[in-house]
Length: 165
Image 1 (tube, rainbow, N blue to C red):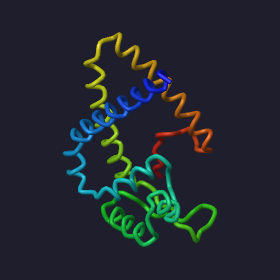
Image 2 (image 1 turned 135 degrees about the vertical axis):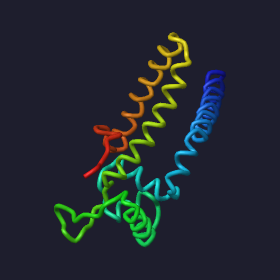
Image 3 (image 1 turned 90 degrees about the horizontal axis):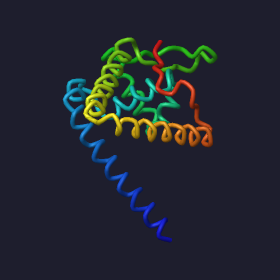
Image 4 (image 1 turned 30 degrees about the vertical axis):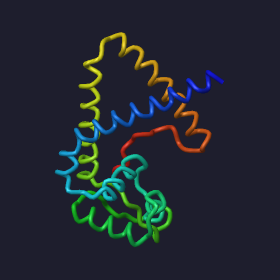
């Protein structure tokens, strides 16, 4: 029983540390996000398109947990800003696919680059021994996350790719 208690305490501690790190990271990015003049929902649309490539409005609505009318409004505003494109589906011309435009992809790349740079600054301040340990831990986490994704039937290849036209 003692091992289980310790494990639960460790999990709680790691959850809190991860939350603190996330809060600090998001505070660093708040200026960039404010300059983008996007709502959280608009940013989520761009995020899904970046991760998954072009999506139908129906699929996008399902992923966001909103209705078709909400997605239409979000996409209309993003299209007016030149961040997304609507295209006919290759297999079903009745379906319109929503994709990042070149400008939308570049915007998401800038956001990801800023995030990577913040992490690089953080990592650069750690000593070599800690970096080695962290590398081992992150590799183990990627292995477990990949296994979980496979068990859930989610794709593991090309994760993080940009679905631009």
